[in-house]
Image (cartoon, rainbow, N blue to C red; front, side, top):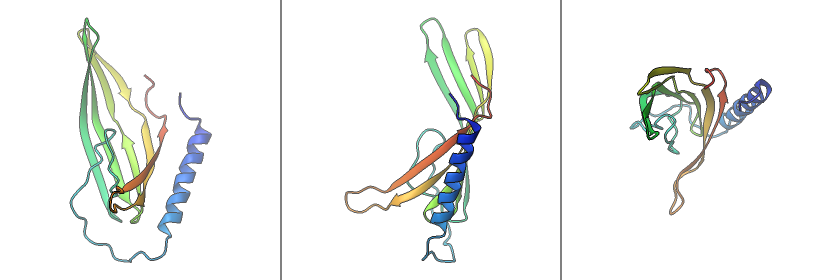
Length: 151
């Protein structure tokens, strides 16, 4: 079940409005420090609460292989490329674009291309830094745009 275009546009507008409000927060230094070690979110597998630094673009790519045993046959699903683009808007907000890429199913009967997957657009918003027993926290919000081929 996909989102209607009106709902998708409304959610996208909401995310952009929140990004603008948070990026307009006072007290942010004009200069940015050089980025430190890369912290990846491993597209569609896990997400850390760490944001990319302000004005930094980070592209993550991968290849995903999964296997389903149905008893009689083994079905392999391959997804390539598994892409995640991240851009630091400020210290509290990053913009995100996820494209799972092209999906192929193959089993004992041959290969069946499923087609291109949907694209997700979203944001990650920093909520709290680590302090004592409280972990570092961030809110990850995204909207799936139904541009891929239906399964």
